[in-house]
Image (cartoon, rainbow, N blue to C red; front, side):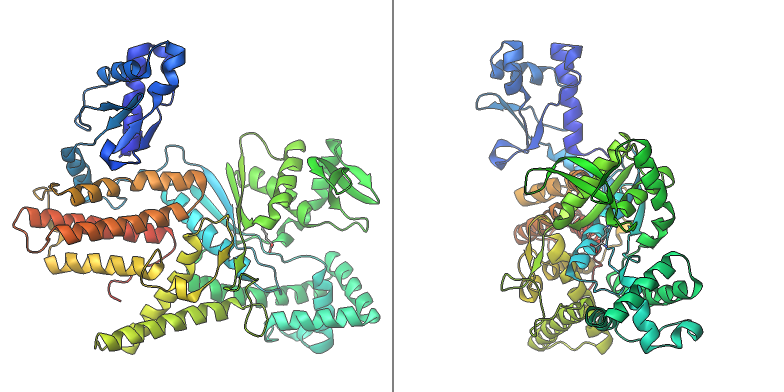
Length: 585
Ligand code: ARG
């Protein structure tokens, strides 16, 4: 089903052509949801912007447009407000028939995209042997939700984990591994050296303190890059250990990713340099190979170069991203590439994209987007840390959220004098805790920094996961009490909209399509959170005003259907945010 907004746009486009001729074919009639419900449901503003061109007063233009609208049973006769706004009210009977079509529609009226694309979402992307920190958590949660929404709209999404698994740090790690676990390199197939981050810190300390060790580490890098078998094995063992730790987090967060780390592009880096040379955009600057950029200057006002090969011959983050870009466009045939990282990397991507264009790697046909997000801060407004000042481990952060959720649940059970099994308590706490972390992140406009607060994210009131999960469980319990098998209801069941609050709820349900399409365009999942929150508030108003179970038929069934559609909308919406629902909590 095309959304109401889209249908109105079509109808008004037709009216424009009919009234003023073919050249008005391309003009957007500017249909918006009305700000003030007193003026109706939608507003069309095109008459005002056409006044000059047509040399007529906007109100007269508005009237001509209305007179030329195709006949339809969707809207009531529009009225003209103020200087020439067209006010539109959707007919209740139209809402009734539209919602009725949802009864057997798992997609709740959301059509797949008209233009299916191959899309790459590059997200999560932590670095081997370094901490997977809250920034990576944000990337993981936001990237996953964006991928889910695009997949739901029918796109072919490749979820890529561009892990930092290559680089000079491995020289140091391998040299240290040789020192402390000399046997590991020749015998082990699985490394068990405990916490890799601690291992990294110790290696770094050795590196900083000891000149001889430093030299050994440098030699290890050379050996690794030259493909020495033993070095390669050591590198693999280290990556494998990191991978296992990352996977625990992904499993817990229900994240699917294809790993294609920096090392994968190693074989293509030389070609990148060749390509830049051929395009004659490569220049030498203080021994390094670079491409000078437009629109980027250093503090002295001189043009800034993007270094693609260091003076020692080594390649860097940018070279790898250029090689990745090439591979993704040529081999993966991506039509849209989305990078989800912190806003701090905005310049890096702008520079890589610019060089990509100049080099002919990035063509017009490909849409490329950096999706930036702000910092995560503690409640003191500073960088998020543990009480003792250490970086917070993601596992501990998730554990803590779950443990708070558990406390909340146990308190509630005691208050309500409810007895539940340990399995139930464990399951509910896990879902609530993880969902709270995800939802808190997604419900913020991602561009802004956000304050990480267990109290806020776990509150039962407000735009939080527990509120949404609770709203779902409550709506479901109403449907359950009604004891109707919705699937078997068949054609005879009707939706009847009479009360103001139920009409309002119905209209809002039908906006789901618009919201999801908006997120497809803007890549701002917080719009979906806002929608779901507003939806549950509208449901509450409906439920306060309209008896459901105590109504006579056919109103009772109609209202149960409306409740069921609300529950299904919340469930679908949450699933697109990567959040699973609870039937009872
Ligand atoms: N590993 C990087 C980091 O931790 C993020 C990689 C993002 N993706 C990319 N293609 N550069 O900051």
